[in-house]
Length: 473
Ligand code: GLN
Image (cartoon, rainbow, N blue to C red):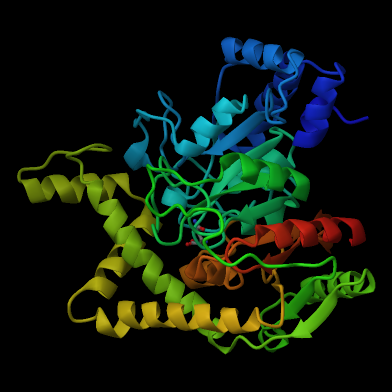
């Protein structure tokens, strides 16, 4: 028998309706687990006190037959998603004392659905990283092996869900930050189509890449949470209406495109074995494997690490010690800026601001930023062509299982973690990571994930195929 905090959203919603569980009991089970485990895992930067009024209202709604499955469900939110009146630090000293003055659109939607908020989760500073080691408040740990990272930047959200401290969570994904930590902790992570989910109230990292996405214990839960937060929003002009892209007609038989030419060096042998076994099982279950060529994919990571820092340098410019955030005073205005930003930002944030400023500077914008932007357009065309013969493209989510703290202290080795995930952000396409079987490392079973990318607004095929993976793995 599962304890309440171990349940999925759908299981908990069912138990609440069967009167086998009350909203209070569910909240208490999650809050107790969170308080007990957080000193070790550091998944949460803050665990909220129970909101008695919200708990009572949710119970009343359920008793009155409210159909919202999220009603009464405790969720965790990444620390870059604004909740009115609460701190939102984005894992940075810069915003340590910043209190949100409004709810992010996703928070508003979840509140209306009756969801409860357990706390804000640990993350790499301003979502820059793949391990949470760049959090200004100490890294989160992987519940499967606490000597290893939970992935990042939404590592706190992933650890909270994987350790059953929260029923589900939201993260943000700029280059893989929902999918990669999901893979490293054995849960499901979805990066929706760019514009599917409002970014209003999300602290921006790379505005043309960022999307908020669910981290959940099942594909069904990811689908449910995605439906609850998506939709056009007047507060975010980049949100898109339903049907903007031509609908994809996907039969029971999904055509899975496999870019074999990209699956060689640098990928852990056990991951490749598990990946191939999963594809073979999907083929036996009636799906079709097709070879696809994505030659420009080899340059996706390089393009991402030009475009993303360019946008980071722009987005972080507002944190100058004058308007809001950490403020240190010097003798001159320039000194105010320099001191505030040097003290407020960690090493990785400073590195990316410098890189971004460089690639946008007048002497280099053509050589770097514009080239990367052109590569982005080529990638989009290439994927478009591949989608003529395949419904999805498959990759392992990460080239290796969760690594040890300190193992990737060289920034480029950390950046290589994102090799299979960044293309979905560069092209705006939706992508999902679904757990496969585990691999054994130093006596510990470590989770790994399979990654599928679909055409714009074809999340439906990701949920269908993700569900199929859960059956065959
Ligand atoms: N790991 C990637 C990076 O460091 C992705 C970050 C993200 O998706 N927020 O940029």
